[in-house]
Structures are given as C-alpha cells and as structure tokens.
Length: 145
Image (tube, rainbow, N blue to C red; front, side, top):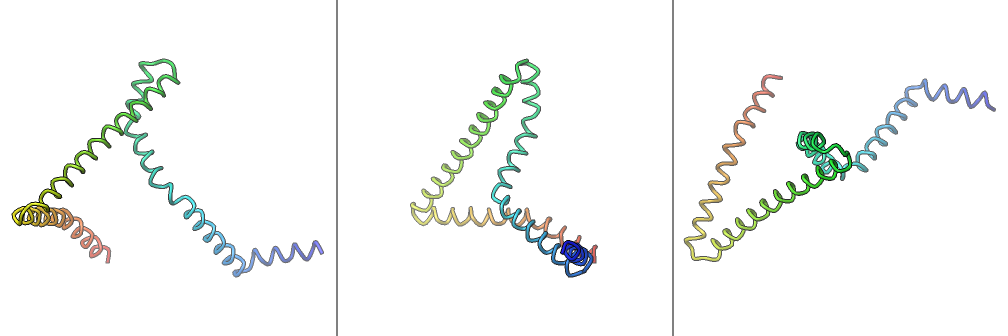
C-alpha cells in the first residue's frame, strides 16, 4: 500500500497535469493572499513614506536624547503633530474652497458665470498637465512596436 502511494506521488509530480494543477493552486493561493492584504496596502505605503521622510528627524532626536524610549516618544509626538497640523491646514483650505463655491452658487447669475469660468480653467489646467504624459506614453508605445 505504501509503495502504491509513493508511485502515485511520483506520477503526480512528474506529469504535466499535476504540475499545472499545482501551479493553478499556487496562483489561487497567491490571489487569495493578495485579497487578504489589499486593504492594508495603502496604509503600509503611507507608513513607509512617513518613515523615510521622518528618519532624519528621528536620527537627530536620538543623537540629542540618549534614552531610546524618550527619543522614540519625542519622534512619535513630532510625527503626530506635523501630520495633524498638515491635515488641519488642508481641511481648512478645502472647507474654505467649498464655502466659496457655495457662495458663488447661491449668489446671482454673475457668481455662476465665475464658477463656470473657474471650472473651465481648472479642466484646461488638468488637460495641459496630462497632455505631455499622454504623448510620452504614445511615443513609448510607438517606439516599442
């Protein structure tokens, strides 16, 4: 019985269908692992960027403060304060912009015309920003064919 099991295992490993089956299972397992990790990719990337940006600050703090725990606490506090301040400033700017847009819409027809001109200029800037990138992509595709 044991000999039959060993022969079956050898056949399964050596045959093409067995290899294809195992590759399919491996691909399915990798896809399921990706689905499991996918919600955490953006926060991991954000943490990675923060770690790179704030490493020089942490190195200076660690040089000034000899205690590793106190240095880590100061570094964490500095990161929290900077990220919090930037979030507050961006939030204030967004709220101010939305307030201006609301005022433009609630005014007479003149405000709507200004809003229309603003939106057209915004789209024009976006198009002018994207055109060089799109043309570079097309040039790359032409060069590669």
